[in-house]
View: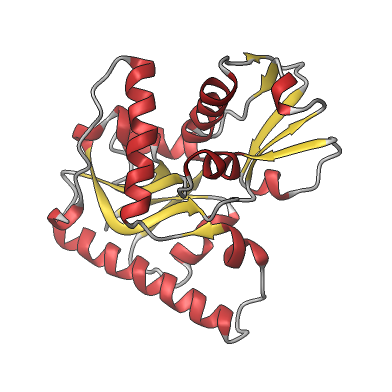
Length: 239
C-alpha cells in the first residue's frame, strides 16, 4: 500500500476528503519533507521548495497543488511595525517554502533580509495558526505580496511522488485526489460541507500554466540564492 503524507492543516482537507486505499501519514510540512526525502513515505503534499532541492528524487502529480488566489490567508507576517521597517523576524520552522517566500519579498522589494530572532518585532506563521486573529497592528499575507509583485498565484505545495513508487498505485492516487477535490467542492456548493471563506476565497488547488510560470520565477530566485541550476519540472505520466 502506498504511504502518503498529509500535512495536518486545514488546507489539505479537500485533497483527502474522500481519498481511501492508502496509508496516510500526517505531520507538519518540514517533518513530511524529511520522511519523503528518506523514503519513509512514497508520496505527499509537501513544500514546493523540496522539489527544487531534490528534483532527482521525485515526479510531480499534475493538476494538483496548494496555491494562492492572491491572498492565501494562512501564511502571514504579523508585525509591530510597517513592513519596510521590519529588521527582525521570528520564523515558523514548519515550512521551507514560506520561509523562502518571506526572504524573496524582503530581498526583491526592500533590498535586504531581516535578522532571524526569537525576540523579533515580526512573527511569521503558517497553516491553522496563521488563520487566528493576532494582536499586531500590521498583518501581511505573503501570497498577496507575491501577487502584487507578479500578478501570479504562489505555489506553496506540490504533490510529489518518489520515482521508485509503484506506478499503478500512483495513478490510483492521482485519480483519487482529483475525485476527492471534485466531491469536496460539489458538497460545499450543495451545503453538505459548512461554508468556509478559506476554501472559496483563499486556496487554489489547481496547477495550471500560470502556476508553473510562478513556480519557475520562485525557483530562479532559489537558484541564484543557492548557486544551483533551476530544475526541470518532471511530471508523473510525462505531462
